[in-house]
Length: 253
Image 1 (cartoon, rainbow, N blue to C red):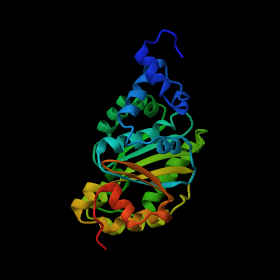
Image 2 (image 1 turned 180 degrees about the vertical axis):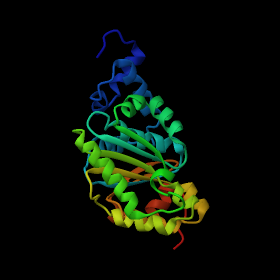
Image 3 (image 1 turned 60 degrees about the vertical axis):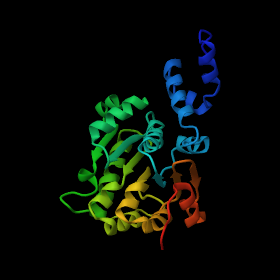
Image 4 (image 1 turned 90 degrees about the horizontal axis):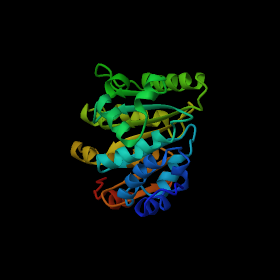
């Protein structure tokens, strides 16, 4: 620890988890990250952060979130932890690629450098998921598989991917969404760890809360980031009331 830090900085430093220190930031960047963490202590739990730290090849995760700020914290943390050893991919549905890139930079991700080196792809949903009104499962899976193979040829461990899924509800492609999620199933066929991120308020507005439990069953880990708490759960053990309590919604079956 830097002996020149003031008392406040020392207080913050002592609350920084060891796995964050291992990212290799200098002290000032460490403090910026620490302040972010302390600001969302109730939303991004230590358990979730530690889970996101490890790269789990072939893992297929799902995130249900209430606020865009929480979405950024969880998805960007997932991406940040792969800066050194994995290729990175992000699919936008709620913001455009330029906005996501700027948000990543504010979060502490070297988005420009990663893109220049070919290690970060930020795509709009209509370049990956729904092209000319068509959401084709085989094509989507091929796109992610090819990205993964490209990164492996670069000598990387595989790919960390994060994808916003709101486009399927806005474009009335819910049937195609379910086909895609169940084709991926709980374990990806390619060397990637992916998080499918669902905006719970958009799902509610679209009238498709009934899809929540089937979506959960198609993944091997679920993160519920509600307005007051965040939970990391085994999909097999999740019940309707777990989702309703965490997300403050009512699932009608």
